[in-house]
Image 1 (cartoon, rainbow, N blue to C red):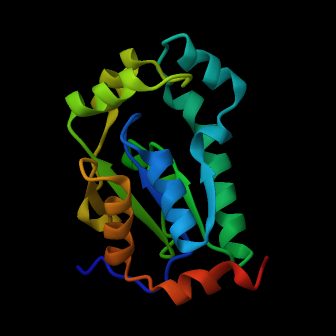
Image 2: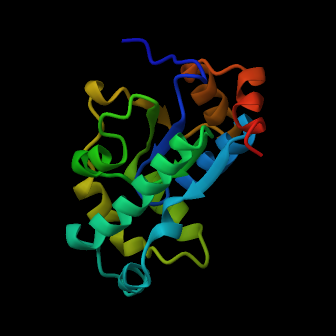
Length: 187
């Protein structure tokens, strides 16, 4: 199946991957490149989730459901307003992605795929993030890579972020003029 879509077909892009894969960086750069709205899934976490992760405790599904529902509400509001957006969200399990994307044909998934050793090095180099390096193992254990029926765009995290963004734009088939016009009428 061809992963290409026109900007008219894509309202929201969910950039997923384990902590340290570059979700926030790539999603923010992608949104900037397309002139779309950017949100970070971390901003939707309730305080209790952030405190739990800060103390090195992995989240369980009961912690995640309200967080995922809040992101899904943002996705639906963005779609209903006729705007376009990009959100960074770990979305490690298929059940989580079903909440975020489900039957929404105008929401696309980008999976940032990387080696655990490389990502561990990146996490160790980060400062002031609530996700400690010790939780990376639990992220990889929970990760269910997207399957073909989810229409994922799978991108390796090794290249420079600008190259990753251009690869995503190319695979989506979004041209520059359409990207700029996508949110212009609602600003």
